[in-house]
Image 1 (cartoon, one colour):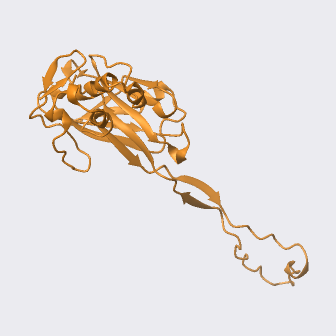
Image 2 (cartoon, helix red, strand yellow):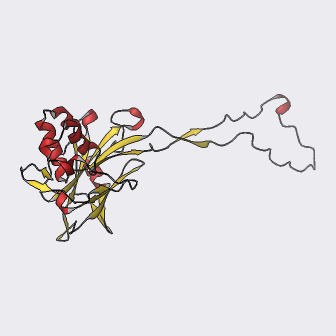
Image 3 (cartoon, helix red, strand yellow):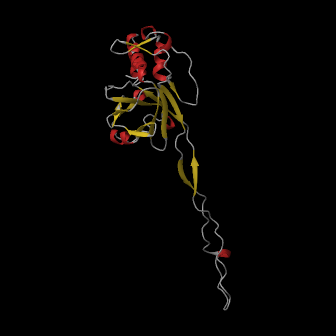
Length: 256
């Protein structure tokens, strides 16, 4: 079966094992394997960019916050029965009184979970799905899914989009307070034993359509990052108090 890319040329995905290693769940036959992109429905195209071998939502616990809660410390007596009495001559000093108050106790508070969509943009089916959405007149739906502004020929691109913000507050997520250079420095691909840092990070969109796109080199040391045959690729981002990661297994024929 053919998946049509932006250049209008078809590429065969039949017999290609492309899977996301997420919990070891095997995916069955899907639309990209059974019919050309021109026949995909709106729901099928949306499914490819939101829940497919190239797109997975990751739900992670919001980082724990430490608050300082402590019990009130009783005041030292200043008068009455609690006042210390004079010590008779020759009487040894009594041991210090036990502490009646407790020091501050760190209390760990767990907040609701947050969620992120991680998508491997350098797949022919993903590009075809976004193109199909536009063909169907679903431009708003396509833009809401935060496609990258560009997919250079010499880069692999991974998009991370917040689908459930931290504590339900828009703009509160793993990227809060970081500029694009700081975001870039926290992202990497892992291929076999090689760790490949991101070359660029780019923010796009606002509000619910906001996303961060990470760009990685296709070649390292003059050699292709992904060789012949299937490769397991792990994307990792060290965010504010959490790690976002996903493993993709991709085949060269599925890349663009």
